[in-house]
Length: 207
Image (cartoon, rainbow, N blue to C red; front, side):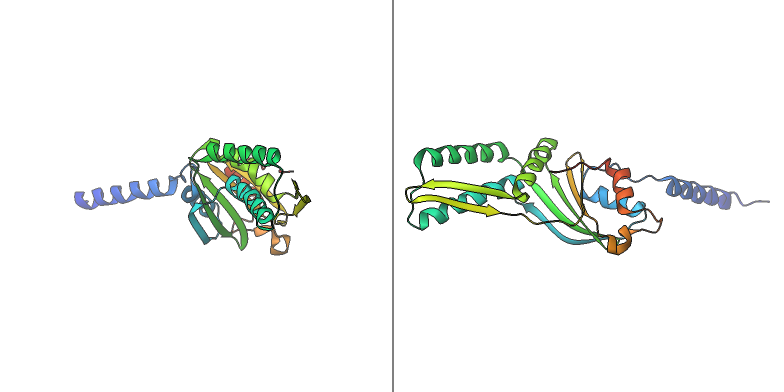
């Protein structure tokens, strides 16, 4: 005669085994859920660096202008008043538009390759800051009129190797592909690009 207690135990164990096998990764809404999904997809993921109160790209863009203006003025030059007023008004508008934005930055190593992600506190913050990512990292030239002639600043941002950009909700993800590492093949032989597109959707392009 079968032991009823043993039968109940076996049923409970079998049920929890089925639940574990069928458990799906959570929807991607933040850094933790993205990492969990990457691991579920067969990737080896390490957190290399994490900053919970990172400056937004719009703030860094504004800081660059403020720093250049200070450099000019510290050199004994007077910036043309109308130009300076207009520029400061624009920088103030950016500051007011982004005062409630927060950004968390995380650098991951996924299958031996670099993945940078930025997690914002709203979709609006993500979309807004991506535009300033373009402005901050692209080659820019600033010409400032002063009482002693024009000052020029030419700035070339960091050049990434084969960058791929993805956005999902409040996440902005940058994967810098390195073909020397075999495109980051994971256990399932999918490339990181394959996995990113499956998890985050098609990449977008930054000019």
